[in-house]
Length: 144
Image 1 (cartoon, rainbow, N blue to C red):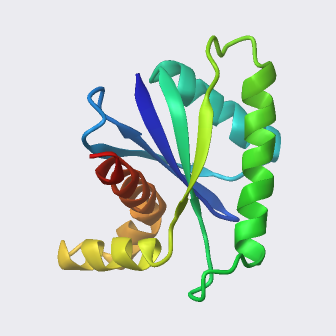
Image 2 (spheres, rainbow, N blue to C red):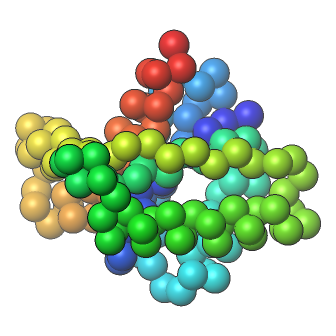
Image 3 (tube, one colour):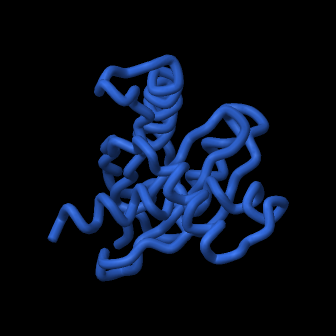
């Protein structure tokens, strides 16, 4: 059983999956947003494929700890995902969804990719996946 990490944005959703021991997070893919239905259907496919039991969604917060417009959009998306998971015949167990403060995660992912000398063009294609990986790794580390 694994944990999925999400970095939900307006144009993309970064996805990371933990290893079976829930020690490390690996970036899996960047979903190009098409429609709520298609986006959620893809996430359900990944949840089934990787036998995910928990989803950790990054929650964008303002630096003062308040929730801004992007955080509200993320919460709305996660509510729709939660509803789909609850009523999906493909999901056999209840999937817990938690939020994780993602302040500075994208900045950290950008810095990490720059230090690895990843080209700007390539960074744009993987940054959300790396941000999801950092969100999930932060959560996994907090479990220890």
